[in-house]
Length: 243
Image 1: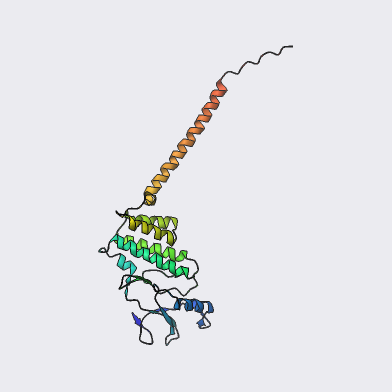
Image 2: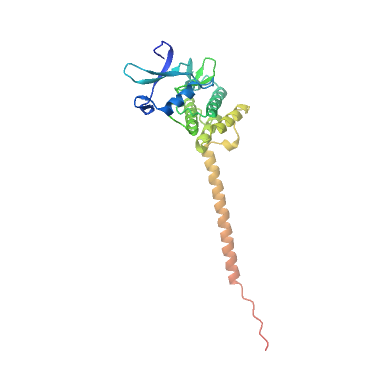
C-alpha cells in the first residue's frame, strides 16, 4: 500500500516513458486514461489520476482495493474447486464486460485481479498502453487459471481438463465461461468426454488415424489383387470372321 500526495491510500504505478511525448502525456494515452477513469463499471478499480513526484517521474494513481489477489485466494486448499471455478467464471464476466466498453485491460495478472472483502472480483492497474486485441486478456486469464491449477496440484481434475482444452484450442473468454458454467452445473464436478485430458485425446486421435491407414491399405491391396486376378484369367477367343 502507498499513499498519493493527498494522503489517500492508493496503488501507484510508474507510467512508462512510451506514454510520454516531450514530457507530456501522449494524446492517445491521455484519451485512453480518461476513458478508463470515467468507466461506469463497478468491477473495475478507480483510476484517481496521474501525478508527478519531485523527480518529475509520472505515476498512475489507482484507488486501493481492500482484498487479496485472486490467484492467492483460489490457491487456498481450504476453498472448494467449485468456489474456484465460480471465481474464475466471474473473472471472465468482468473482463468481457470491460471489453464491451471497447477497452482491453492489457495487464491482467496476480497483482491486478483482486477479490474484495465481499468476495467479488475487482480489476485494477489497467495498462495505459494502447491495447486493442481482446485475445491478450484471454491469454492472461488462461495463464492465471493454469497457475491456480498447478498451485492446488489439481491435475486431472475437471478444472484442469478445461484449462488444457482452453490452452490447446486458444478458447476465447466466452467459451471458457460456458465450460466453467457446465462444470459448476455438473453434480459430480465432471465434464463431458469431449473435454478429456490432452494425453487421452492424443491416444484417441492416434487410434482413428491408424484405423484410417489400415482401411486405406486394405482397399489398395484389394484393388491390386483384383487387377492381378483379372490379368491371369484366359482371354476369350475371338470368333473367326466369315468371308
